Image 1: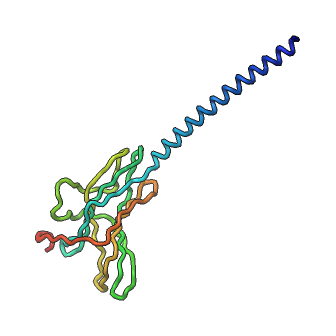
Image 2 (image 1 turned 60 degrees about the horizontal axis):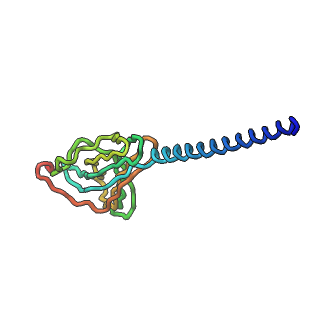
Image 3 (image 1 turned 90 degrees about the vertical axis):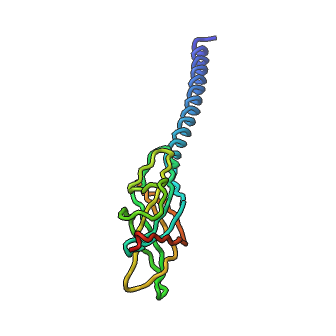
Length: 182
């Protein structure tokens, strides 16, 4: 064998070793990418709402509705609901439909609420994979010059990154409380 044949054989062996090392690096980077993609997907999971109870009540001659809800952050990163609003779809006496949006109010508390549930403050900060339950009160919009019938109540929460979560109710029971209805 001549020296150039030995050099060529050594180059083939070195090239094959480089090919094996490159292939193993490619597989490792593919695994690292899959782990990073899975981690990213876990951080993008939504906030999931659950409606526990909903009812209307009268306090100081105004109508309010209370929602007892549970918000679960399914993500592995903390999230917050920056806004929580009530969207009411209604039909007036002339059969004209409309929509009204009102923010949560902290002025009144719902009657007969058990101490197991606390008031949910906005913004609602949720830790990773955490659940927070409580009540939210909204003043139902009213008009003195026209009567309307509410078709649906939708509680919409918007996370700080712009994603929305909502709970919808169509019929709410009415709770009376002699102390608050004056």
